Image 1 (tube, one colour):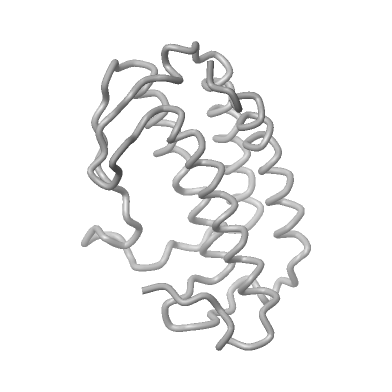
Image 2 (cartoon, one colour):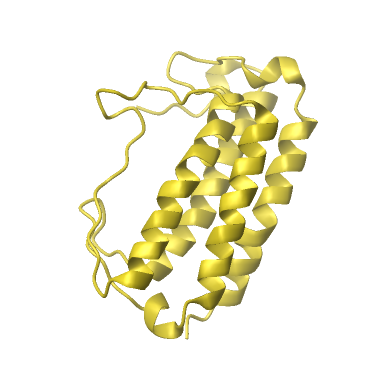
Length: 165
């Protein structure tokens, strides 16, 4: 049994409410403000979180249906047809989509038995990849984007923003 399975599920289950209340607390005029040339806007971060949930659900489903799945990296803006920044969704729609797919993910996670939680996979970005790592990654990915949104909203000066390559 995965020792922190219950805690991961609880954390993942709480994020839609945390994200929604957080976004609703941000003044509307700050949602589309671009703070730096390489910075996404807050609205783009929210939209990205909503847009990747179907892909992440698909990855979870592949783990449940295949003994040793293989994955390819997903890097936003890396595909020729994909813009460098996410298309901005209406915030209500993005939050609803996020919550809807998170509920589907949680249903799958709760039904997955211990053998699925222990399944390994191959992924060229990672030395190790497993169902458990993917589940933990979902939680960290959500909070990383929420941290970036908070930083974009509250940082007094652009010079203090975390810079990414």
